[in-house]
Length: 136
Image (cartoon, rainbow, N blue to C red; front, side, top):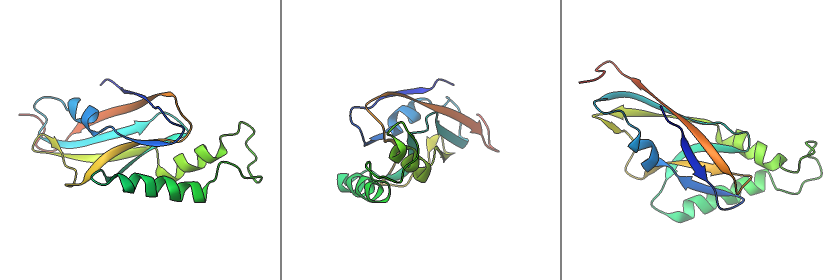
């Protein structure tokens, strides 16, 4: 299965990668699960609302409060401790059910790639596992 390549444009941003994941869904796969995994320690993945852009702003705002960029208590010497903490809080993977040949996300849901140390070139590993009904 090919990976998704992402080029982030900002230091911190949430990027909707749902269309790229959907485009990789194997032909004939009616049910199962899609697993997406960030191969980075300063970026994560989450599923959340994509209809209102303020949701992304709120998530970033709160994460900045929890793990601010400048904090004298950080021990990691590379200057990106906040990015590591934020990625850990968001998580590095998501699992999405596949039903009737489509990702089974809610009406307002999307998969966000969460960049916390950009801009960078990034990779998300995608795997599909067929369910009980398998392939047609």
